Image (tube, rainbow, N blue to C red; front, side):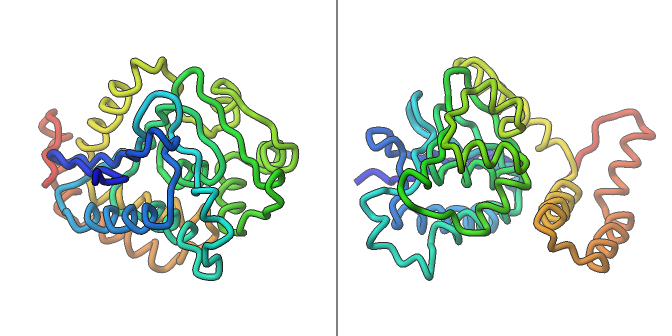
Length: 250
C-alpha cells in the first residue's frame, strides 16, 4: 500500500506530500499520526533547514479531516490539534505549497506553516458552522493571529468562500503564482532560507511564534539573542560580510 504522506529529503530540504489525491487529500487519524512521525523525523535530521508541505494533484491541497471519522474520533485527545501544533513547532522553516483549494481543517495546517504560496484558481472555505461544529480555541487563535478578526469572521461566521486574490489580500497567502510557477517559487524561497544561518532562522521562528501565541518568555528570549552574538554562525556571518562573500553556515 502506498503511503498516505510521502517524505523526500534532499540536502538541506525535506518535502512532505499528502498523497490521497482521489480523496482530495483528506486526512484520517492514521494520516495525522504519520504526519507527526514524519515531522519528528525531519526535526531529528540536523542538516534539514527548510521543509515544504504540499498536496498531490492540481485541484486540492487538502479538504481537511476525514468527515467519515468525525463522529468516532476522540476529540478529548484531539489528534488533529496535536498534529497542527507539532507542525507549527517544527524546527526548520516550513513552506506550504498550496497546489489547489483548501477546505476545513486543512486551513489550520496551512496557517501552522511559516510561509504560504498559493496558485491562481484556488479557493478557501471553512464549513464548521454548516456542520454544527465550533472550532477549538487553539485553531481559532491561530486563524485570528494570522489573518485578523474581521477576515476570520467572514470565513467562519458567514461561511464565505474566498478566492486566491482575496486570500492574498487578507494575508492568508504570502505569494500568489500561476500553477505552473508554484514549484519554482517554492524552490527559490527555500534556497534563500537554506543560505541563511539555521541557528538564527530557527531561533527567530520560535520567538515569533511565541509572540503570536502570547507565550513569549522574555528572559529565555533575551538569552537566546545574547547567545547568538557568541555563536559560530555570528562569527561566520560577520567574516563573510567583511570579506564581501556569501556566508557558509555549517
